[in-house]
Amino acid sequence: GAVVSQHPSWVICKSGTSVKIECRSLDFQATTMFWYRQFPKQSLMLMATSNEGSKATYEQGVEKDKFLINHASLTLSTLTVTSAHPEDSSFYICSARGGGPQHFGDGTRLSIL
Amino acid sequence: GDSVTQMEGPVTLSEEAFLTINCTYTATGYPSLFWYVQYPGEGLQLLLKATKADDKGSNKGFEATYRKETTSFHLEKGSVQVSDSAVYFCALSDAKAAGNKLTFGGGTRVLVKP
Image (cartoon, rainbow over all chains, first blue to last red; front, side):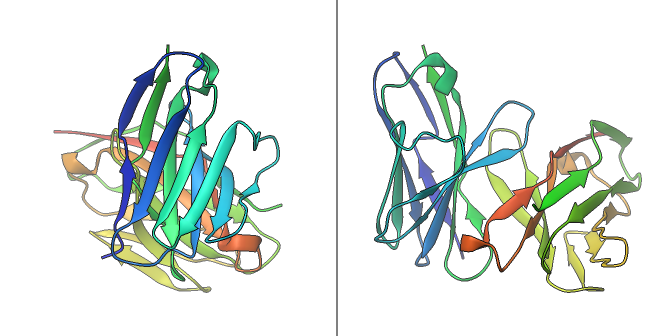
């Protein structure tokens, strides 16, 4: 149980385009979802926390207009990287919790050319 | 604020060797403590957790004991296998923090050689 599916697992796109990443809790209702960014050989950096039906809470230094987060249902949250540039290339990981510990997706590797 | 410090890697071991990864924390409240494992190209998997002092979390041969007096949560395994090669993250969650956010240590890469 407690499976979190993240899609796509890998995306390559041109600079200036927008990219949407989906995070789904498959067998539980996720009242809270988290989005992290991980640089190579580094730890996870929390970007934002989202609760179903309300606006996301962004960590200091994270541009909310750059990284749009939507948590419209108890099983789905999306992260949209708008007007992506090469410096946005990274590994993005979501997690979800429904009252217990956080359960993580397998991550999305984003490469901006 | 809360923070987690864990030993830097990489840690290179031979199969069947004993593994210890040190982890210490600072927290204003009374946190829950976790170890997560990340295999190459994947997200994080919860390995074990402990929610109060002297609790011992265990899973897949790994153990860690919540030591409040030393603010530590060291991870140990008595006999590692090649399949244990991964990055291990120590983390804490303070129930008083908004959203039960996790604070991660820097991660320790472990490489087990046959």
